Length: 329
Image (tube, rainbow, N blue to C red; front, side, top):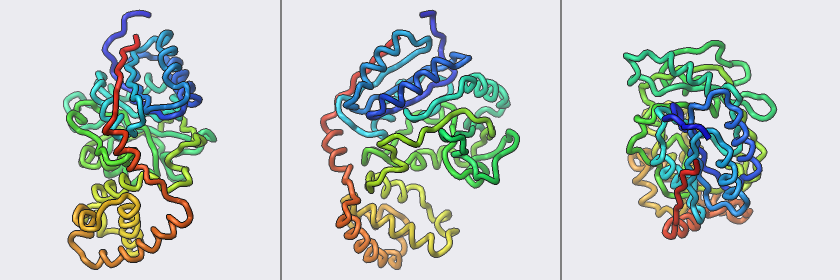
């Protein structure tokens, strides 16, 4: 293959038992009309043929691939922390292994990056673009409120406008030294990005850059088990700050607190540790009363077979982790 220049964009993909899907993502990367990117892909102890596929695919890829292979499953948070150490692009973007990019994505994103004022670059995180699902429905915007034209806006505007998943292409340097909290196989990305984006600007665009396939069997969003409870508890304690929480209607406040206690119970977080690590329960004993209701709901969860204590396997695996790093081309 020809000499590869330093990439503008690093695409980060952690994957676990999604060989069928990651083949589609790899094909979409090969189809890009501009190849100014690298792929940092991590295999989280998959038991399918993910490992052999990635190594075989790299032989024909015309872009840089760094392959991180974990011998056992350590989870997305821990694997992402390893992947971040190998990023060399000026911008980076996470892409799920069950997603695919449209052919002109890198070209279009590169052009938008060039529209960021050079003298105000430090004020911008990067680009926020639209995703759709395999049926063409927006995963980013509400059906009757889709952005019409690109705007230069701050994160708070975007956060209040969107309904869900968009594609973020962000400056790599703002993530330097920042790590995901490793407490479970998964912790919501909002726990990581909340402070990083505060008061920062984006080019917010309706441009569709990615198709998200929601049919993966081990989908976190559509799984039937109550999993990653410890990660969910820690995420709530980080994200639900008092200023945000006090704006909620009463019923939403109650639901948030009940779910927090519920996740702590299933995540085996001791009562006083759970109470003190969340400022809402730490500073208001009235919300502690809701622990009783959460405990009853938790018993029902367990009796109905809904709970998977993923943090137990996570703690065992993380102690015995073994990581292999390959620069495949």
